[in-house]
Length: 225
Image 1 (cartoon, one colour):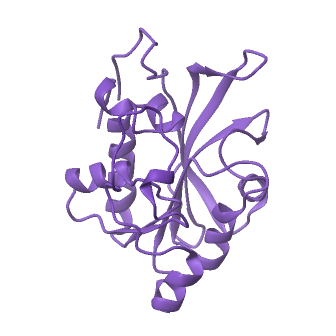
Image 2 (cartoon, rainbow, N blue to C red):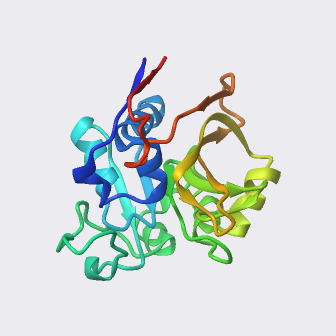
């Protein structure tokens, strides 16, 4: 299936750097493929406003999301504009992994995990979710800087991406974001990676490079087969 790369300036204000760079429609296509392969609930760890979860469910009503975020007050969510929402697009179901597991212990080992632009540095809720939930597969949007943690994804998560022995990387999408630069003007290396348990048949690793979809990038229409 081909992916049509395009921007939607009306929605850009609701998305993080990662989704804006890839284009939200591409991210939704990837989420749909992720769910369709396994057809079990996706846990969104740190779901925030739940905009991408909401849009993906509109695209495929069968997708079942379980949203976790310690902050259930949308007025406290980071915003990209003054014209913002008054409530999340998707309801936050639980405040933590522990709360979810207490309510539904059978979710352990019977779920998928979505890590969307998690907090960087010493934050560890992304890694914690992997260890506690033991998902069948993981889909993460993050940023890597010279093979180390970057603007999204904590140190422990990045160590896991390099050293884990339980999951295989089966798909990776990468780009250098034209809009987002570091203080030294170096482009950000943004990725969407898909891992699954190595006990499952391992597909050939697929790596795709995308042109940046940021609003100020003139190359905003391209088809990748």
